[in-house]
Image 1 (cartoon, rainbow, N blue to C red):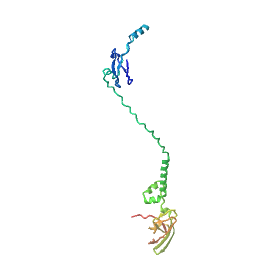
Image 2 (cartoon, one colour):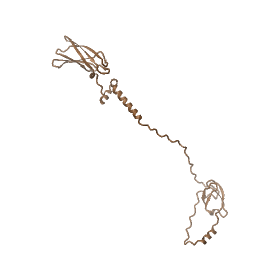
Image 3 (cartoon, rainbow, N blue to C red):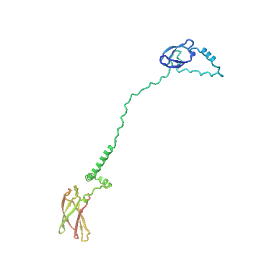
Image 4 (cartoon, helix red, strand yellow):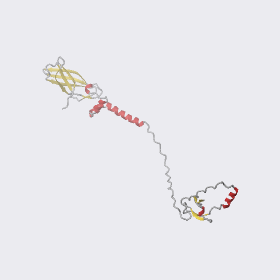
Length: 246
């Protein structure tokens, strides 16, 4: 039979033969409530009426399997609470605030980065002279990029070269002009002597001007004394050269 607790309405399966004819006191294994449980009403007369009104079945029905007692009801009649496992308490998590949607960064950081890179590239291009002057190692980098700065010797112009000779002492004077739009360093000058056939005679004579820098559009004048000029010298040529540091 099915027994229901009057207090918590928990239903249990209980063998009716354990109650006896007068019933017994039972206790709910779940909430501990006690009550007097009556046995079920006798069913002999009802069974007789049913058997008289209905034909006898051709074969006896198989007996129903004994009802199993729910866990913990073995101690229900003895008044002791059965140790039933308790379900773990359900922990309800606190209500969380909905996460804020991720902000879309967009393309402006990349545009900003590209602008910075372009600005640095433009500055490196227009400040190539000061950069290579302070950091000579960067000349190789500019050369790899095809941005090697023109040497001052390629930009400056030498003109108005005149000579005055007395015996073997020659006075040479001339001008150096800067047609560029920026100031340049004045490289060393080299005087070379040639004979009537255009062959170089004697060793080149290296010298420097008094000025180390020449401004944009400026002209500076140099004057030197060329001693011990070769006897076969007919013409001279003044060009830019390079003095090796010792």
